[in-house]
Image 1 (cartoon, rainbow, N blue to C red):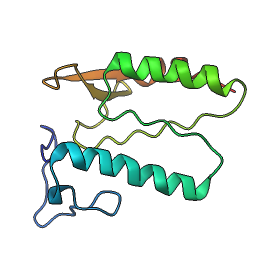
Image 2 (tube, one colour):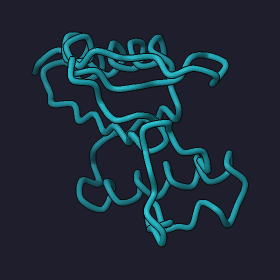
Image 3 (cartoon, rainbow, N blue to C red):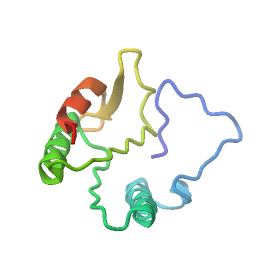
Image 4 (cartoon, rainbow, N blue to C red):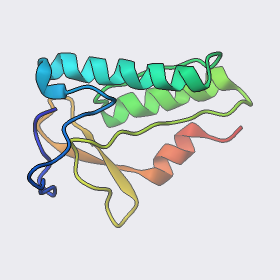
Length: 122
């Protein structure tokens, strides 16, 4: 929140709202929580009986643990994985998305193949 990745050049003026809220109106940590909550609320309107689990600014290990946990609990049901790539570089040509390291000082590539493998299939 409030830090643009190195490969993004923002036009001026540019949109500031995320999930219908202004992330500059609160602290970055609070904005992250509110964006996650508002996004979850939007999904709940579409599918109220589904279960939701947020992982805000996860590391590669956090994503793997989350995927393993979701697949175990979903059994043969579908799992929707929503990745909000705001604040990280664009996906690579090698089909990698970006997550942070544990200290939030470095971008770490996460292979879509690994993600798909961890998520499994219904």
